[in-house]
Image (cartoon, rainbow, N blue to C red; front, top):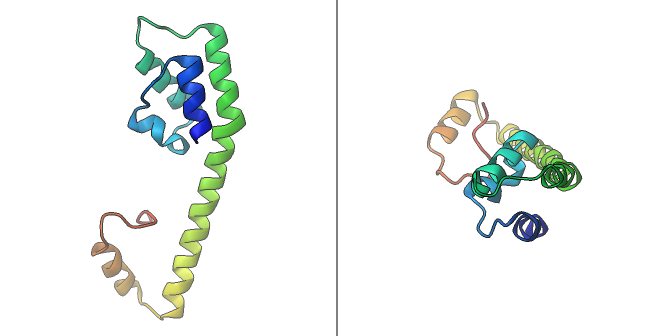
Length: 111
């Protein structure tokens, strides 16, 4: 999302994105705009045109990326389930595997 960072820098004076803005696919539209407003602060409020530009950019780039990220996560979980089935793992073995998983697993623990 290098292009998004460039747009935030050039058009909205955000030189260093926060952790939230570095993970854009985790933000819905309102959270994205709230984070930009937070960074800009009260001294540099968004104009109506700036706000509209952010909403358009979100719809054009971030919303589709969120959809693709959700699809990828679903496919990764489906593949994980298929591998567990192929190895014949029981529910208890799968639970133990997740309980002892390292903190940086490629996919988050299922809910």
